[in-house]
Image 1: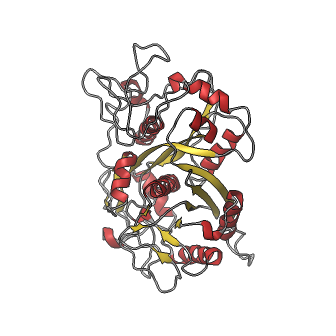
Image 2: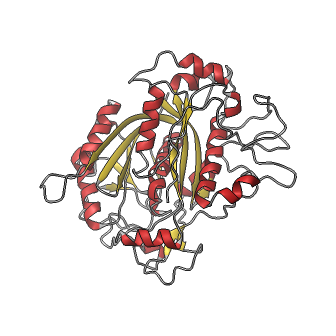
Image 3: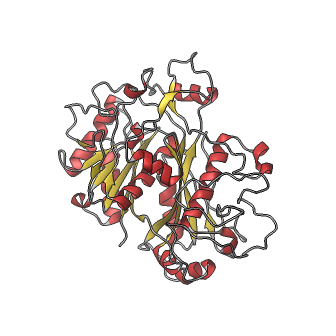
Length: 429
């Protein structure tokens, strides 16, 4: 159900290239690249061109390179350690409300709702019939023809999102030379742990990591597995089915998609003149105690560990991107964790996943992308369709976005089995 690639040394790098038009200059990197037309190839393995050959083009998000990529990475590799700043330089997004980082953010900042009745299969025999589906996605023209019979929907979305992220970062693996690259994505954890793992690997000397997660389990088999959790909403009304922190909360609506992030050290990003979205500055994780132990759940401790890792105080955080389970007991636990750290209504809280559904393992990386884009624009995206229950002392963003200076954001995620994690992202001056 989930895409998994483990970090690996590649020499030479893998053949996942920067998406460009075969007939002209590169499109703006934060947009969904155009599909290849007749007579053109996907950029995932360009043909007829020597490795490292020059390609023209520039994009709105890309800065001029001051140093060849392989030299920039090599120059930054000498002094790495536990305090090395790790930044995000590229985003590739496939979400129910938008393809590409630009399309996703344009929809998210305005509260575009994308939950509806499932179209990928007939859901009528099942008690739950709603989901957030990635629209209008076809792999033809975006991936090499040889890959199509070897892949299904999940790896196709993941590969294309990776190509978009590399293009957004201005990185061409063919030009990197013999550097260490890795691609840790997510399987059993909750989407934030692979990002923390990527940060560790970069601090240990890896040059560049492609991390994140994509999920695409909207099929009869996958639907049965999700129904067995007992956490799915059975409402047939799209705007009232997924209601975290609402008195009528009764389960979540699943979705598909996710986000891929290109991560590297701040030194290498500066050396090659890369545009930076923000820094992954803190991470914390904690499991819930065994049932009946009488000990508190682990989410508050995960938040405190992430803040300590970032060297941040609660007052430094401008917004929390909530896990937003929409199960009354889990909502209560999350609200209590937030208020115990930040105080009653002490920090803005948002749940943009109310527009897309919970994307399983893809949910947390998508929230990370939204947090980085919120920092860029100075705008907190809305939480749609929710009427905040009086039981929760939260400053929950409503159906309209809130303009604010966002310098630091906290992203929360929880997974099956009581796993809690938190990541702090910061603006980079």
